[in-house]
Length: 290
Image (cartoon, rainbow, N blue to C red; front, top):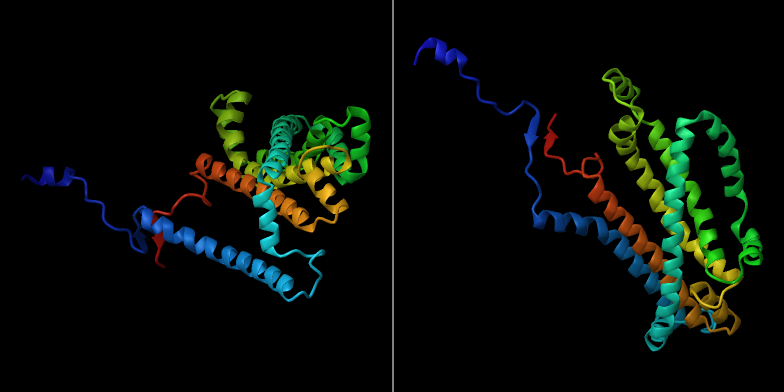
């Protein structure tokens, strides 16, 4: 081989000093990582149930005040159809209110970011609406809209709306200015800059707000049911409280909490699927060894 051919041959890429490559984790590695992330909450949850059982078993508190876990789960088993019906009603109100809050909140955030006049006008109103206790204005919604599903959805929207708007505005404003200048220099139109740069960059902030908003939406739906309803978990809790049926009361609280946890996990899964490129989600393929 001639010297010119040797000179033209590109050098073989070798390992970089201070950097060790790490392959993608397999199914076993993912299972180990999942176990490491869940065992602490699982232990804490078991400890809480153990403390609950101990309080009920030792009769430190009367049974009609704090029922045992067994009595609570017996109620869930005996009246499963009844609880399921009211659970579905609350879940439907929560999902619909959350969806409306997300759609309107994202649209409002985009308008506020692109119009300083709208932001200066709308932001104080949003802040005022957020600090007003929703339980205080819920009866007014019942008077206006009746005892149907509309007041519950409206309260869920109002409670979930603010985190969505704030997180989206923060995400849209957190874009690197150099990226915006580069897109403008290359002749990108405003909508192209929004679709290609601003919106994808805002998604991590948006999902942080969505995880807060979806749990608040459950609270909003139940608060609306407290004020005036004939179905839903809020109605179940009120009826159980009036009848001193503490096992059913605890059962309703457990199911309500479970709805919030499940919806939170679903939003987190959606975040993982939609943002695999984000630093908090991707599996690192290289590790510095300095």
